[in-house]
Length: 98
Image (spheres, rainbow, N blue to C red):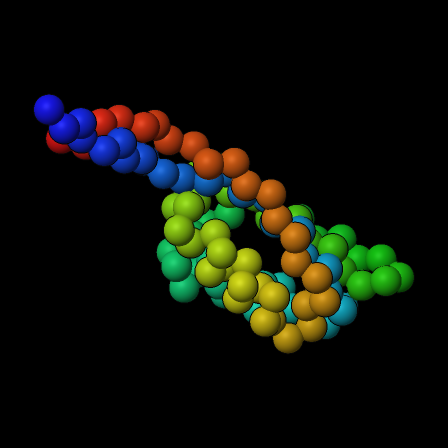
């Protein structure tokens, strides 16, 4: 008797992304573009300006897990962005494949 493999079902990630960037009038639309082109709407978006630049915190409660690295990579290539960090927690369930 062979056992069926386990598969992940409903694989999503709860994600919090922090972007540090130079202050620029066109920065916020450029930062939102990687989400918009994947039809993702952040649950929260907060930008704060200080003497060092802009700090942007973006959170999504349920983002498709396979898109996290794509969005983070795009943010890192955005003009004006100096740093991108993220935390994610994979959510979903595991079951035996049918």
